[in-house]
Length: 245
Image (cartoon, rainbow, N blue to C red; front, side, top):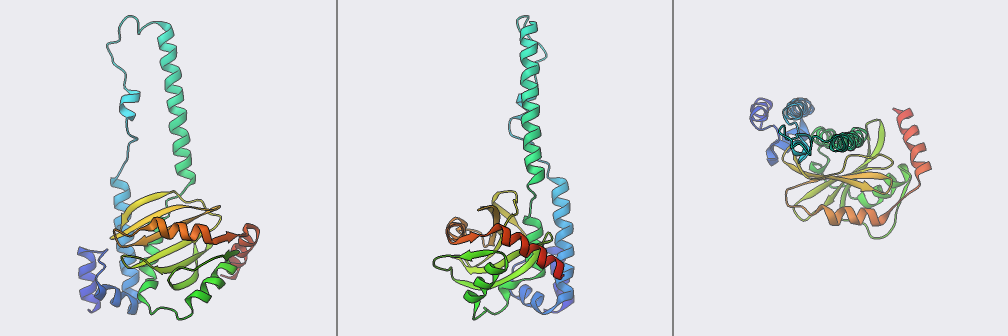
């Protein structure tokens, strides 16, 4: 596949996971950047077009215009006002939580597209590299290790994070460890043809990407049981890593 063929396919199916596509991406930085721009534009368009409304919100805020005389009683009116205030506060709190817990899935998906680590040959010393990554982030791996093929440190949202690849039941699973970073929890999200999930991991977050049908729960539980974070060291590592850039 040459660059022209790749870009024609990218315009039709930018999230294609064909082996020939990843093979070309691995050898062509220009096309990796091109695909990243296409996927970013598509994600921005989807985010603009998809506006979600909380379930049952309409029924909660729309009142019957033809209230009975009993409903017009001042006591009922004050009850309705109080209920509206409670509802507004609840919605405000929910929106506040969502605002302060960012959605990292699109950013991580673009990072994978720009750096398809799982397409490179397995690291023969991936298990030892995992220990190095943990030390760099201020963590310690305790217990048995997963079938890991790649382990490295990358910079995400100006923070050092672990970028790992482990063997899953359906194929390679990309795992991001984000210590000290609270990302928005998500489950069974499909982005760029991949299944994605994000959940809490200690005082941070873990994000997983893989093929549809993959069992993320067992993988995340293994990481949760095996990692111990020293958060003071982790924060220091963030500062040192950022300062070195």
